[in-house]
Length: 364
Image (cartoon, rainbow, N blue to C red; front, side, top):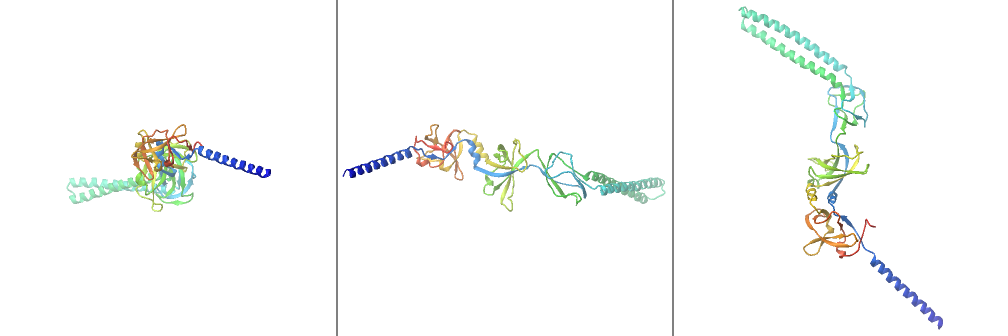
């Protein structure tokens, strides 16, 4: 009997310990603050509306070619070579060009001789005409011969000058400082006038090229601001939309957009990968007014006629703050009435209550 009572007492004590332990765990769960997703309400959130990957390109990319044809006898650059204005990049064989120049000089001498003969004949027959020894028709014929000889002489001079100019076209020189991005002709190859032999990218002005889908290009305009981040150099810079292609690419159906970088960061080089966050001009103008922010639509807490948002205070408690809705976007809303330092709850707003303690992702 005593053993039975002792066993019952032990079981009762164990059950009481379990009950108290369960209550303690529930109290701990209740005391643990919920984790919320937040976003700071500064105007930089406007730039997160449209983000695209791009590549650093040169604003001026020149396909260079010779103005005369011939065989390339020297190539002084490689792909990636840095050149300065006036540097000789390639040279073609000038022997044929020199011969054409000599031929032009010979034609000038021949035309000059014909002009001298025509001038002497005209002088002789003009004197005979004054003496009434020849008819006026004869004088007119020699006058016409002189005019034709003079025109032929002028034509020969022009062709000779063209030949002399061609002698300077045998050297392909750089017109500006830059980098050789591609070479399409090699030493020993015969090229024609105007045939592209290399591409020179000027490095004095670099910009970012991005591809924008056709359903979003209408929201971008020349002059829109952008924030450019570089993966390789872990730096960022301010940019401005400079150019928007008027037609979409036939294969990708995207529009080419060029973003200039007025103050490029140190280490920015051709071909680098960049991320461009565009800010539409209208949104950028709104960002200049105090308290404007772009928030997810899920951040709005509507209780009555006044839209509000939950703001996390310094003591990690939430409180409602009224806002004014300026514009609705694609699952986003532009609001006014927030301070740049306000930390806004963007998810689960209908499960919170005023004064409730919360945990943020940054704090965790």
